[in-house]
Length: 127
Image (cartoon, rainbow, N blue to C red; front, side, top):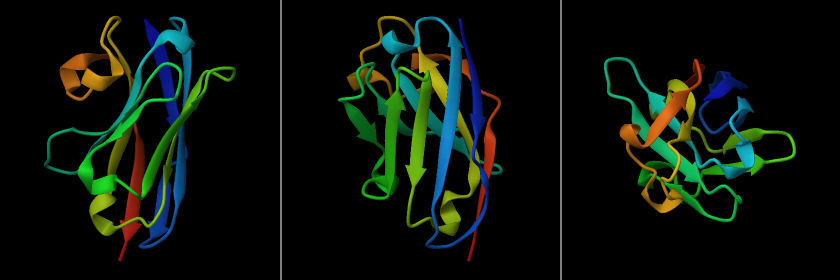
């Protein structure tokens, strides 16, 4: 089990930036593939980004490529999501998640690949 706590959400104007953090405890963090998801009102939870245990491998959904950056600091047991050039359509509750053991980061995309979730943090982008 991995316990995850997100922080850093808030209200920002379009074009602005936010950095989300996710503090982890429990299962050895440095061996866990991590991801970020988001869920807008009345929409399904969707994949945003994933990062390999080493931090070298990253993958993004098309809508955030070039604007969002996922990173991790294994010494601090923390994964980050830097969000730049925010758009109103980025408004959602953002969740960090830990992938199931054995899931390679190249396959960690769908909700079913992850078995531990944070409580979420609200991001609101005004136009």
